[in-house]
Image (tube, rainbow, N blue to C red; front, side, top):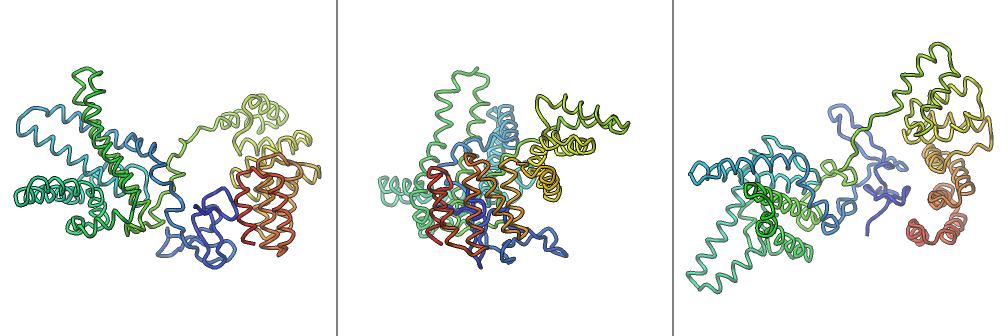
Length: 477
């Protein structure tokens, strides 16, 4: 069961405080640069106790590999591995003749694919779920790892031949089945220990497979499917393509399934790193939730600012206001800069009702930009003009969090209560209930009142996603 942040109950915890036992997500932890010679290295501190927190580990953050299979299969479709697979497949076609030189070139291309697959395995095992970039390190450095893997297969076949000759083919086949069953465990040991002798030690690799347990058998099943996939592609799929492309698609299929197989083994190491005895450091770990960052978007409001700035410089403030309204009528204002300019223009011209109306959206944008001082200032200005001024639920939730962080606990509770009263049917209302109860229990030291709020929360929102966390919190009070 995964642990969730005490302050953001729907977010997975990355840290825990050894003093107060609080579970914290990255947003809650105070990140402080060590400075001096250690500049670029960070301390992660509990916001309540101001002491170093402990990383909860990979197992609380990542999903089991059987839940991640779609992403595992799309792993080689990123630019770096795709370019590598296409280039090497084309090279194999160009040197597909039967000569010794062509055979040598094709062998080198397979070694390069295997080396890149090894790098994929190692980077995945350390917690980086993005494919490695193509450079001299991923292609040529530390190449002995590739030869050591070949050493595993050579030793298996030597023992198979010796057993078959000395004892008989039946026991030879039994040995081969046994050995092939544990090949993934040998490769995992080779990566984690860098020792060929350690990897082929039956006591070690059998124990490792049993430590992983059923997960190992499931991984092995998928590896068998991946190993057979190129032949299936060749027999049933490639025939639908022109004959001239058969070698290209077959080469791509072999490279693709090899990279997927090694990425899968790397993810198994990551998932079972404690059982495997492989250390994963949080400085190397890459949060999976960040692996598909959206491309940077061009801000369409920047064009509007360029148009209205000359009007403002000429003192034509009403014209600037009208221009902004006309140009944002369809899509609204989405940038903080344009929103701030529009707010100030309305304030200067004392167009109070329009300023208050825009203030709701402006506060949302400031909150999204995490601009606390300006957001609090704008909120205070609007409330001073109209005490009934009501921002959006998301802003109220964020404002309450800021007040709580600043030690203004009673004010924070008041904002949470305002959210619940103004927006009782909003999906953020249960979270506001819960956070108010936490403050009342943890900081205002009123457990009875906190219990009353939490019981009311469960009664009003029994099917909300936060309900199980509320019940768990109640049980531990």
